[in-house]
Image 1 (cartoon, rainbow, N blue to C red):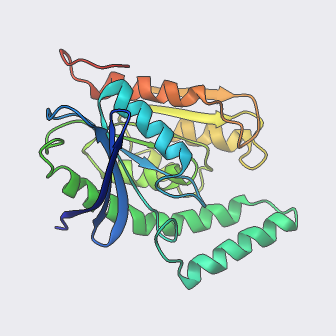
Image 2 (cartoon, rainbow, N blue to C red):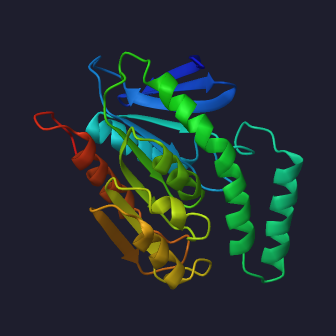
Length: 255
């Protein structure tokens, strides 16, 4: 099993940010600056073309840390952030840009490429979870959540399906192709976000993925607007959802 190697640490406004490597994969862990008690962990997945410290990741992490007292970790996905691109990455990215410039649907390229990335990323996430649970401030028995949209869902659905330690998941904004089968294996509570006027993901496709989850508790958040117009308040909703499912009875939460 790979151990966690911290490479840099900084603190501001009550949040400690620690860069780490696990099995050579770069990640970041945000934690409350005070308090040594164990707290739930949320693993997040970033979107395509972004990285572990993208403003969306840092912003959501701070909401979870300051509002709930949680720990939040993000890995750079294969070919993203501080990780080198392979020849396969370069070919798929070039094909995506070609399709975009030609006015062709992006979905087939994104679905195929994200499926390839997920096959690499899911074992990496599981190894990172092993290592993170070795930390005394997290521990092996606490609840774990997952939060990832777009490519974070493409990686998150097979990850949550394969990982029994996940207690609840926030997902959304992806096609059902190659994910619906895995979604049928997921029974934990799910909050799912979609854009009603998404120019890339047809409404019927987004609804099909939501419908595929086998969870007895699943909530659909459908907002008007295009793909990149997901309202900021959905992050607040995700925090409340995760707090509701990760905070055990009798424990305090700031959310």
